[in-house]
Length: 337
Image 1 (cartoon, rainbow, N blue to C red):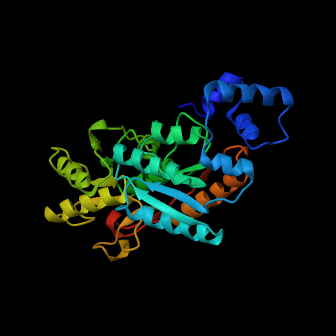
Image 2 (cartoon, rainbow, N blue to C red; image 1 turned 90 degrees about the vertical axis):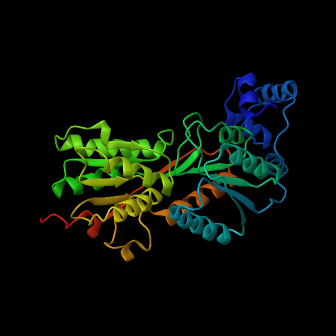
Image 3 (cartoon, rainbow, N blue to C red; image 1 turned 180 degrees about the horizontal axis):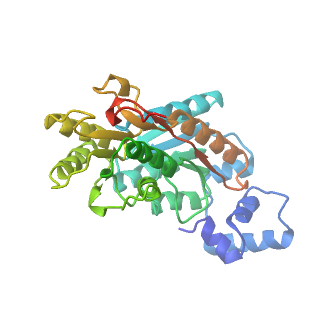
């Protein structure tokens, strides 16, 4: 089945120009319009129901889709609240799906979003080369990506500065005297974990500490993975004195193992997690964590999506929000100034 990109290539124009023709924009000159229409006919291109509604300037469904990779992760709960509040303000309802890092489930839910003819979609792609998400964008559906970027297509995106967040966390541990710091990472195919590793390595190099690849342990994004990776770290003959966990579920798994081994935090091991949690203060000791503005990510993503629904030809934008290091007792006493 042909998509917007196919039509654009055949007509020798941009995807935005094809969208303008489909929406009867007066900004397209007659010659270009004719080329696009000929390409549409030659390819038997069938615009999505969303595009047809926009072209006909008829009413919209007032539905947006929201597809996330792991509803167990508390970070996404904050994002959901931000999306929901903005959608409610704009008079929209949300259809939400959780694909649990399962490619088949992701395809199913994206197909459902397409068949339900949502006006737009917010999605955290499975990885940066997520063909299912890219295919949906190429149909002309307004899409905003959150948390993870797509490498193969221009699309609106809202992310955080993962490098900065990780770098600040590792710099704190270095100031506290640590030199052997392990990074417990999620899948490397997900760019956020690679960006956090980059920040981790930058902080070490900035303080003339060699990067020891044996201290970088890679698993998935789950609580169980946090347990497995931490067990591996504790079995090292020259084990680290501090852990940096790649997300909050990995952090929980790490904490469970550290407590099971009767290690006292931060005396026997310091730990910092990426993602703060509202109950982090209730842990013993309270958790030092990199806080992401989850609510703001959701709110800004929904805001961008409504802008895209209103004007499908507007240039794509990338919003990068800052993280904040919440210093508590699990990392040790803050360094004196």
